[in-house]
Length: 180
Image 1 (cartoon, rainbow, N blue to C red):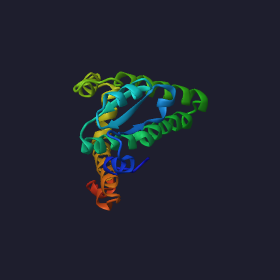
Image 2: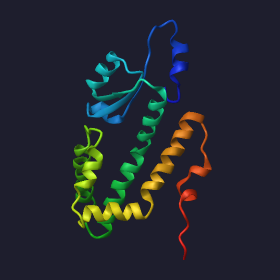
Image 3: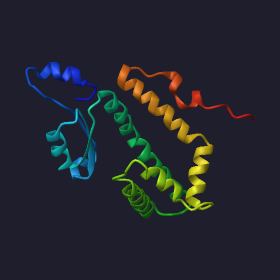
Image 4: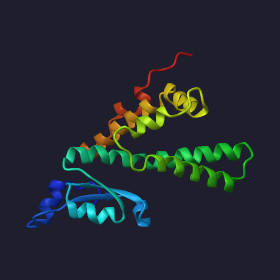
């Protein structure tokens, strides 16, 4: 149940000795997604690893932080839609535009599907210096898009933990104003 804390769940299932919270992402239905769980219990991990993968953590505060990342799903799809719309606006028919964008994003995501602690940094570092891939991430960084994502994640965390939306954490409020 969304928004139910582990402490409240324990109260509801008492006198059960153990319980866990699991958040399976939609792709679990095709056995390709991941599930976030707490606490770290072997049988919980076994159930959800059989349906894709499971990231389980013992500390509830870490669970709440990791849960914030699931809020990026809409952003992931919006980036794909934006790329598809850009292609269509430049004459590419909608069907091949969608097919190529979806397959390209899936291929890129596959590179980081089972990362170690340094994998994501290494994937960025391997982009060709001065190449198109480096150009785009550097342009996005210069435009403040990654800082905006951090503010959005802070806002999501506050909403998860405290149940409020903090207007001070909205990305536009935190970005420096550009001089005209």
